[in-house]
Image 1 (cartoon, one colour):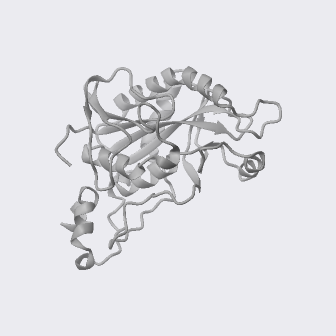
Image 2 (cartoon, helix red, strand yellow):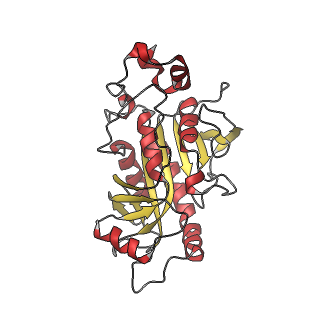
Image 3 (cartoon, rainbow, N blue to C red):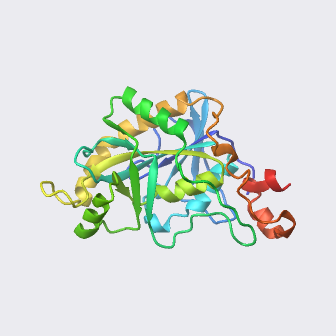
Length: 291
């Protein structure tokens, strides 16, 4: 874990967004973390004077399944780079009639339907329970939403993102069940990022790029990868513009959102009982509470 350039803002690009246009003077930074290697090299550069670190969630060749992504390494790497806010973009299916393909949704809640994915940094002798009732940073999400509207996107303010396991899309029965729960969109990646960002005391928000109606809609074609890719290509340029604008319009200092102090009362383990190995492994995250 050698020294690396620092960036205050991290951007995670999902399907169809493997680099960020407008990122100037960037260099590739490959990191090793206590949790292994991130999805790819971080591209660390500047956008109009603001330091940015970009990471392709699935790798720049899109070689990682949602369940193969090393979410812990990705978020820990951002922490090592000094990132305080993560902006995420991801492809989703719509679970509501009024949310159309190529719209943008800015979720404020999640439902977890994954199976056995690593979604905490803790364990191995150190226990922490972060508050997660409101899993998205309100200030960061609001800035993303306003930026999207200024770029001319069709937006939906708030909503619940159901995170499924994948990689197959839903069965028709599953899709109808999820609709009955009142969720707004369905995807395969964002929940783990949100949980780990909270544990790392990093603000997190996502722009969900709608590509399809899943398979519940009787009058629309069932989801196909061809339709998904076509809508992703149409949305990727606008999504990149939204992310760039958001990075520039976020305040220099974080507001009292609480994300930056999420661990203040969360670590339960008695300090003298925490193994030295666990302390060292999580130093970038918990060091200021244990040193």
